Length: 145
Image 1 (cartoon, one colour):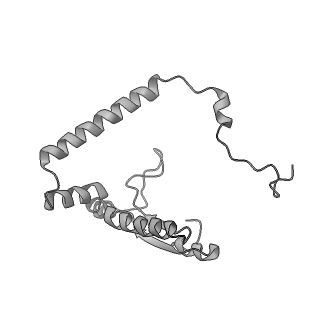
Image 2 (cartoon, helix red, strand yellow):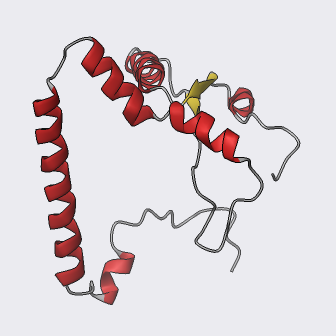
Image 3 (spheres, helix red, strand yellow):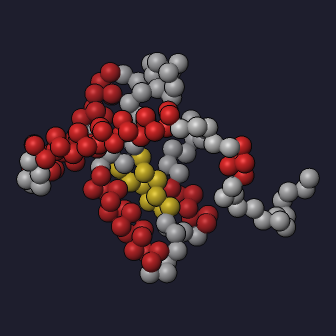
């Protein structure tokens, strides 16, 4: 932790915008919060700061064994996994059959495989690409070099 404050959405107050905390493990909650924020922006109300809280199942890196949490905590959050929760809603409401869900999973798997293959077989970008599409302001007052 870098600060005593664990919620960052109240920082939006300093910028004169509304802020809200959203359960990132609930696709429905995220959808509703983004819908409210988009509606507000389109009506001329400006930006909204959303702190969407999720849970990382693994450590920060391959060298992080994540010994700072218990197996019980991990299992508790796996029960709340957004993908499983959405599948449950889809099945309970008969939005799709098991066969349709399997077809979607297969389509996604193939698309990921194709994307990985494309990335691995593509040449490295030219060094000049590094400087494309960068916003800069010539008279930026805080650069003094």
